[in-house]
Amino acid sequence: MSTLQIITAIAINLIIPILGVIFFFKLVKKMRREKILNPPIFELFIVFATYGGLLIVALTTLFWEWSGLASLGTIYLIIPAPIIMVIIAFRNYKLRKTSSYRNILFKVALLYFVIAPITFLSLYLIS
Image 1 (cartoon, rainbow, N blue to C red):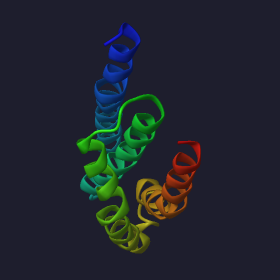
Image 2: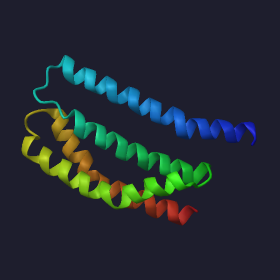
Image 3: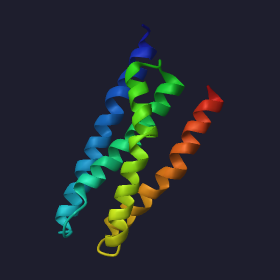
Image 4: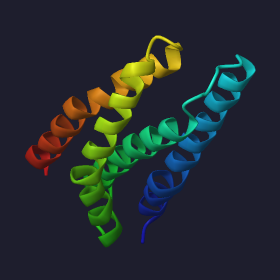
């Protein structure tokens, strides 16, 4: 394995997830500092994990070798993720006026139904 392949593997499989977790915790800390009532921490985590998984699958397709784990991630993104995102969007639709975080979470959950198909179609056409 070449140095470039090792760097690519580390970037895709370690650095990007770690950066996502750091950003998630910073956002949670900001919500707590702003004293948001009933902050959507669990829903935010699911949205981060879903979009992070989409990013990792896209980067794996473009720059790395496909694996069984990438296949499992893709299955999650195609079958359960849309159902979960609908639930998150529905729950936050009712509460979207209580905080800007819930409003953004509602929009981001709905946007998955635009971003994911475009991403998968683009990856299919590119590869």
